[in-house]
Image 1 (tube, rainbow, N blue to C red):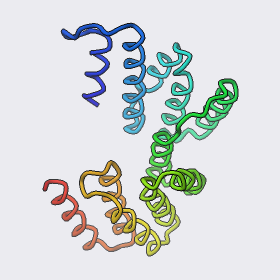
Image 2: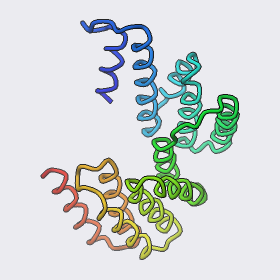
Image 3: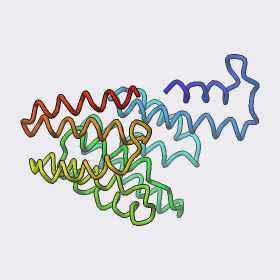
Image 4: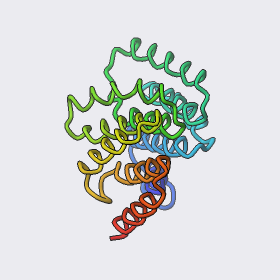
Length: 212
């Protein structure tokens, strides 16, 4: 979060930073706004809607503005408004005739669904993540992660453990971006299955690995 704030200050020429060219500064500023908004949305803060309004002032960032609104409403549990944002996004995709990379948005939406135990939402997004994995091998851990959360939410603990263990085994410990979320999901799945001692033991192991 702090890094994106610093990038925004740099783009705007604040705090002693030398002002950048208008084109470069604008791109950096809008990019930082989107990144900050995505982080705030994940934490359920109110900032994303204001940032989306700023992003919408720039034609190239209108899609990101609606992505940010959709992510915010998903985290708030407002499915109706999230679907309205999705329809607006589909219109923009058609109008712009441009293929956008939805990778980062997919993970954010997956988290929004899984954190709220939205079984249908997780089920729907699994196919999108699988499509990404078919193109990029680096997405394979995310596929197992999404499947694991799907099984956890529906109460199929054994399949949840199997998928989450496969995901954990495919990422670098305490280094991969998904690792802390996978560790938390595995501990949570153990707890929900009533395996409290195992949950505590693995939680401590993951914490030790994170500190190493």
